[in-house]
Amino acid sequence: MFTGIVETTARVVKIEKDRGNIHFTMETPIADELKVDQSVSHDGVCLTTVNVDKEKKQYTVTAIQETLDKTNMRTWQEGYRVNLERCMRIDGRLDGHIVQGHVDQTAVCTKVEEFDGSWKFYFEYDRGPKNITVEKGSISVNGVSLTVVDSEPGLFSVAIIPYTYEHTNFGDFKPGSVVNLEFDVIGKYVARLLEQHFEAKK
Image (cartoon, rainbow, N blue to C red; front, side, top):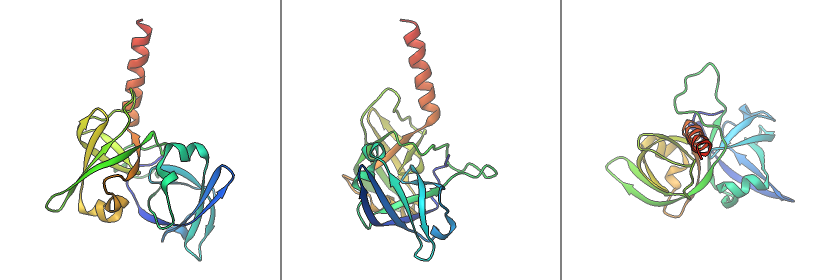
């Protein structure tokens, strides 16, 4: 379980294909604090650390085909910058919102507007009965907990402050960038309950 508050970023330094899986070796200042078997959010994808090299400040995670199919990990290349968050501490404050690390689908950045000290990013995604956004609701984009500004079917926008722009990979986004989305878990449960309710009335 995560909060969507990104701790730091990592760079992909090595990509190794192993049958249907891909091993990604990452480099980050917090590598020496990680341990094998630990869950870490990578652009909102919960992955297990399988190897740690504390001297090189590197660690490795493995993505199976299911993960590659549903996330932007299939587009990662060496040098790509990834948002990192370690799992939530039970004794800490929930500064963002409840993020499971289970990506629902990808989206494409369609437009970036720069204002005087902030940015507005627009994203387009495939509509679905459970995958919805609402104005002022929560959304996780590449593992970053954000508030929806504009919301239309299959389209939403978020506003980004300088700190988020500088400390996450939002600074790398441009039109055409593929990102991971995790919709608000509470909204998904409400949508499912309503679906069951109307199915029972048929």
